[in-house]
Length: 240
Length: 240
Image (cartoon, rainbow over all chains, first blue to last red; front, side, top):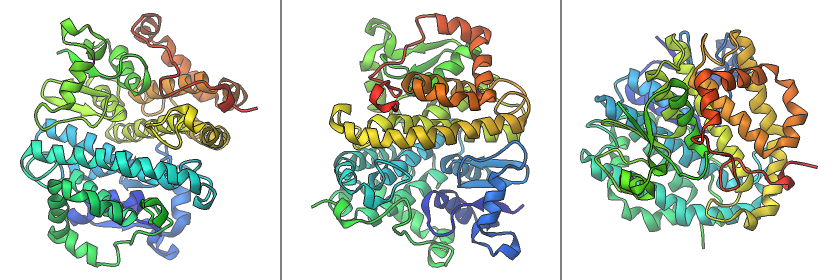
């Protein structure tokens, strides 16, 4: 069974959350938009799908097609894949809570995006720079700390080094990507605060050295962060 | 089994999405923060829970406690309850897609919130009025239409009058609350555009007359929209 993942070809963005689960599990998948058109890839493939194939029409990428099943929303796809591929907690209560974690991570990602697009998704960053500076200050001072403190509390309370249950899950992969994104976008700020979250730092390193993830990160399948994506590095938004 | 739902007592907000599922199913639940402190309610009960009871600490309300299980994130809770209480689609593919719908609705709700809080969650609306006007214009002209058109397309493609599967689900209840919220916050704009979405309008009425929902809407358990909530009516944000 080959999974089809659909997302923009040029940015890691929200597509990276399900992609990391596929990679960590070593699951066969096609990164459809990044394939040549001759192989059924390209943007045309994504648009065609969103025009409607049966009743399951995703609102926006990323989305995943698994036979008859279509799943959209990064956190929902990550949970779906994690539960199928052995990258979810074992107990039912932990499984349910892991879903809550993944969707909270999706919220953190959305806030990191809104820092450079506070006024409008359809406008350029250049058209909302003063507003972005105001929003960035709050994000750096309050929101980043609030999210990181919460993950740290979960790791402490859980006691296994992971966010939920006793093994690596898609929730941990999501935290890895969030922290890497924050380090890219707000390097100065992260250097100041991340020492306060030793559990988070340790878990990020646990993810990085997981055998399949380590290989993936060295491959050209891993897309670098850039200024068309969700996590963008603009020095003026990273504080004084 | 009595469910405990935790959310702010004064606004429908994101708590209304799980609450509607509980009400539509006639499930026994305690709306904890709205209970008197003598009965274990009030804000203190919510704070105590967030301070940590075991490893499942919700990031923010709403959250639901069901025995050992703690679930947070409005769309995740709605899915959890809908699947337990017979308000989810029957086929596995429809069930998965319904989760995607609920989380897309959560995104629409977040955008409706950000219209009046584009620059900062910690600031008052009064401190970001010019930015809110800019953001509101895009939301009214583009985002509202994009979301409503998508729901309409799903209803058409599905053919049963519902968003997913052949019966009323938590996804439909979420759409009901979103549309009611948009009508409250942007009445002028909604009067102009909602005629373009006859399937959405019909489904909203289907939800409204469902026996248990109809009774609930008349009860004092249903909280009115207000200007401390997610959906706020500010005339200046509803267009010329």
